[in-house]
Length: 209
Image (cartoon, rainbow, N blue to C red; front, side):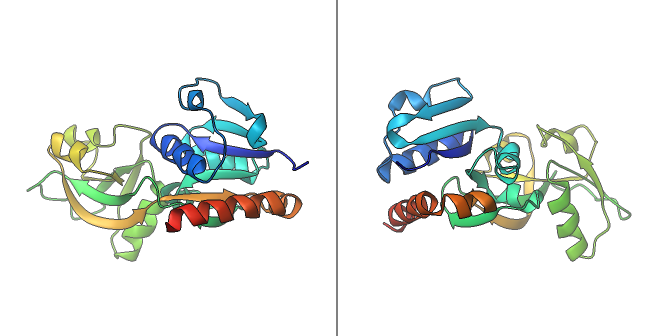
């Protein structure tokens, strides 16, 4: 009997796309799986246990071994330097990190303020550009910061660009493309290598189709 695999997955769009991908790979995830409000789900026939978490917490669960495997956005991997293996680009939930702000607004010449929920990514990016900025960490509604005068610019995820447009903001610089990745706990990979390798192989075949 194979050991059960514990998988941490983020709620929302990534969860829906990842569940669809796993079904295509032949894993029997029931349809009600998508509608549940439970935080821990055991799918006996798939020999899997799922932990549903906030996107930023997935890699924490994997790093500490409470989940063997996780699905996390590349943005989280860039922001959170965690001791996990990144084994597969799932090529779902495509978007990108960008710098945005109000059009025709003069930026402060000395240490402009940048609001973001990715302070490490933003700091590294502007340092590479030779710019000194003041980072303001926010957890949500990043687009609000320039509108109320809290920040000169923002660094955030852009998907369709609709949210920026509806709030009168424009994209100024593209930082990096983002997709969701399969990450693995190093100890789990040694102990459950067979079942993890099978998961990676089955998902790889679907992605390449």
